[in-house]
Every structure is written in C-alpha cells, then in structure tokens.
Image (tube, rainbow, N blue to C red; front, side, top):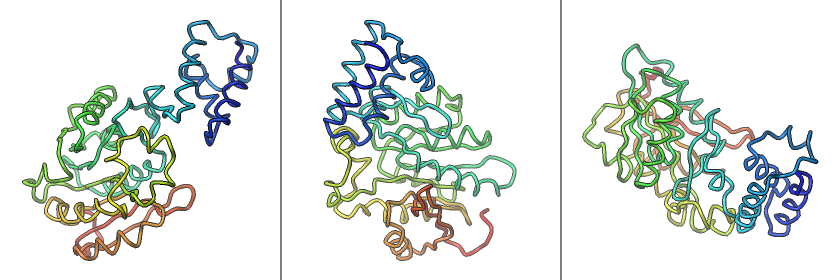
Length: 291
C-alpha cells in the first residue's frame, strides 16, 4: 500500500464511520505511523508503507473508526509547543486551554523577585502545571487531581520536560488537599469539568466513550465544580492573588454569578481564537495590583 492509497482508503473509511474530519485524521494516522511530516506525504505519494507499518495502520484505522481518540493511539498530544504523554484515563489537552497559560503568565509577570507559588486544580496530563513551570524557572506548582492515573502521567511529563523538582503532585478533591496553606498561592488555575450531563448528546463520540468522565462532565448543569473552587480558593490565595478558570462556551455569566455569591469579582476575560469567552480571572480584593 502506498501513501496515496493509504490516505484515500483511510479517509473514505473514516468518513463512512461518521468521523468529523476524515481527511485530517487519515493524514495524522499515516504521519504518526511513518514518523514523517505532512510535507513528506504530499511529496512522496508513491512511497510504500513497510509491512509492519501497514499492519499498524490497519489496527489504528479500525480503532479510529470506533471513534477512539487519535491522541491515545499516538500516545501524545501537543500543547504550547511541547509534547505530553496521554493515554486512557488521562484527559487530552485542548488548544483553547493554552489561553490559561497566556493569561496566567501575564499575571505572574507582575510578581516581585523570589519564589512564586501556583496551584493547578484538575491537572490531568499536567499540561498546565508543566507548561507554567517551564515558562518560569522560579515558579513552584502544586498539581492536583483526583485520579492517580492522571497524576502518574503528569509526573512523567514533568520529568520529560525537566521541571519535576518544582512540581508537587497531590491526589484529592479540588483544593481540599492543600487546605492548610492559607495565603500561600499567588495564582490558582483550573480547567474544571464543565460539560453538563444534559449536554451529553452534543459531545463528540470519542469524548463520551473514551475520555475520563470525571474530567469532562460536572452534574446536570456543568457548573458543579465552580462553587467549590470559589469557596476553597479564598483562604489559599495571597492578598491580590488571582483565580483563573476555563469556561464552557456561553458559561461566563453563570460562573460570574457564582463567584459574586462568594465575594469574588471578575477582573479579566480572555477569548479563544474563535472569539469565545473561554477564560475568566477573578480576585477577592479590589486592588489594581496583582501582588
């Protein structure tokens, strides 16, 4: 089977199985198996897949036809210019979450010299915690997740990206595992589960079937995690510190109302590339200074 034949066969097969982006998926399958780039595929359509690779191609194609995530097949996902290990049981990083890094780093950029402390709640693969630590060498991060499987992957990713010594991994529910650290953190960031069970029918098949349920769904409304984050963050942030939360599309106003009930004010909103309000920054105090 040549590259051209593999791409055409895969695209047709995946289209017939109801995949949203069959051509894109076909290219990524072949690229990953051959360990080549997209330019190679288009420059060498006559290249024949070695028999071992062709066998893997058919195995992966069948799995993808069942809506199994490509990231789990490949064992990795790119995030903020770095590769992160992902596998079943670990939530797959999304491009829109990179906005939390941009905003978080902007807030931390106003800090004084010395150690800076951040917490990543629901760390999953560790993409937020690791990226923040890589971007700033004086940052100490607490990475929290209820899943031991996710924390193991996050620890591996921290090791790969040479920041394991600056990330502490804690297993537990939200910030309850660090409740003794009053006024400790300069920044708390979270991409919580925010899809309501009532929206389940609209969620992509690959997410519903294969990604960890607790990282995706949050009660009927999708808002269950936010009150806990608002309540628990109060005592843990330093004066003037910031709470940065990822949002569902259309979720800004409901989350702002939940924050106001706990004494938080909205300080900043970030939009993704599609113009969707995807990130909100909250503070308790009214000072213009972050620290």
